[in-house]
Image 1 (cartoon, rainbow, N blue to C red):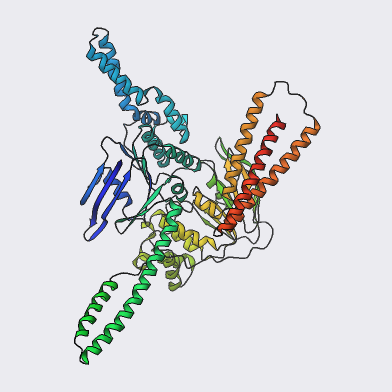
Image 2: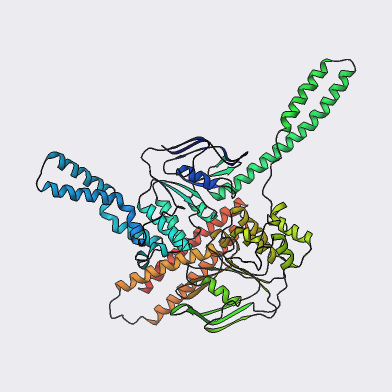
Length: 622
């Protein structure tokens, strides 16, 4: 059954420029579709037309009868003074109306037992039960917990929440309304990793239809079953998630380029043949003119095809300064708080040259504060922090500001980087600032454009310790790829705060997970960290089960049992390291199918052995 049908949609905001130009697609019931395309291609315009906020100039849209459609990016206006809890309970207004009618009928039935009243009451009661009227409190608690909406927030005034918190509450309200079709416009922009994972888990269980605009590639990989890319106002279809889209898009580009080159060779061949035909025709064979004219028509038709183009890649790289020494950063017993609230305490770490560290954690745990301590914008309440004598840092903050926002992008480059006008224009062009764009005042740039400009400036300095705070925030996918291109050849120390799991997985060789005022220091990539976290959850659960079974007076454990446990734990650690090494080897041999098969078989063997060790460890622990 088709939930959404879009046929030949046209929308124009400026005369002669159609944002949507004959867009057509269908979405069937229960599909999860990623909507892709560069900024300004019309993705949000499409959603606004689907919800009725805008009217299309041409074309037709059909939503399946009886289906409810909700847009996540819209934050409705609620009555002044409403709490978060009242906003969430507003999702049950249909059920509340049913309950009110049932109460009214109950009062009437005390004096009137007519079959009509009894029949209506039974019907309403069935509807109330079917729509989950008896589980509203449980549903509200489950959704609020999944999206990190605390009990304290439920009593907080909705107007006092931040933009990200309002987005989460609005998402929770739509989930509680049991919307049939969800339109998600950048739903993860203001969510931390925990809340994003909660949203993904919900969407994977959601029985309805989902259309998601997102620059979060990891999110699209997890939830999208297929992708629709809006290009030149029309739809391109990809029957897989984001990773499939990337590979297939490149394959299609290479195929188009190959066909274009083939057409150009054919044109050259036909032009030579037509010229020869005309020459022979002048020598007495007039019939050859007709054949030559026929060839020229074919040449004209072939010439209409344009050379396919792909997105520009960065042509510049960081200037790096050699690091001399053993220590880039040392933290010893660092503590920081504001007022009565302690963000973290007892932080200790040693960072050496060439490490790539991802600092992750929920919103409000103090990640940006820790970064500000490292770049000396804040001072610790306790402990000391030391940077090596040859360390030269460069810092890209979450919110970028410029000394004079009336200066153009070009003038800002010349003022801050002390480079020549040609060098400035070349570097700006590599970061997407071309033509008249370089004369735009920096105050008029978007948040993403400011981040791009600041990164462009940082690349001109001699840097061996690069610190980035949410570097991919506000950036579309193309800009994120530009940033990744810039960082891919950077070989010095990198520390970054990010919720972008695709970015983390690509660059991190060490994870700092900040939670409950402590940093878990994990040496390994993001995939290894996730696997380790899952294993820790298994251990924690096993420990809880063991504690439940243990008698209050715990018998003395034999010493030989302790030694056996230690041996088992060493063996478990050895196997875990071996599995992590196999994962890294698989990444290094991603294009070798035969090698991947061998590695997968070996990994399966090792994981089976590891599972046996887990079971033995649990038995001995008990």
